[in-house]
Image (cartoon, rainbow, N blue to C red; front, side):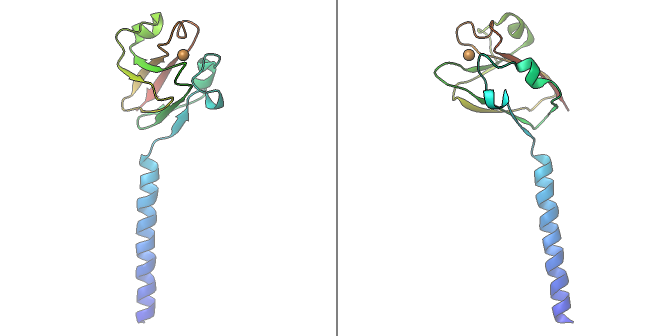
Length: 129
Ligand SMILES: [Cu+2]
């Protein structure tokens, strides 16, 4: 009787731990490796990369690139369109940058080095709530 009760309580504890663990997994967003294995580089087609991909609040964008050649600027829609580098929202320069998406709506990123943005190193994503 005592042994049975102990087994039940162990099972209860295990199931509580399991539920907490799955909750943790659920609240953690997905990681999106920008450009997949090509990374945040000049020749990557970011329009193709975003196609069929869903972004949600809490997801993480991971920018992998050579930090001597590129950077990542989060900008507004105007700066995205005309590759304006003066009024960026944030800048990332580590070469392996994780950007947590904290808001729904459109987000814009450009490379601020030389004319990379003009040559297509720019990313626009639409984030679902
Ligand atoms: Cu660049």
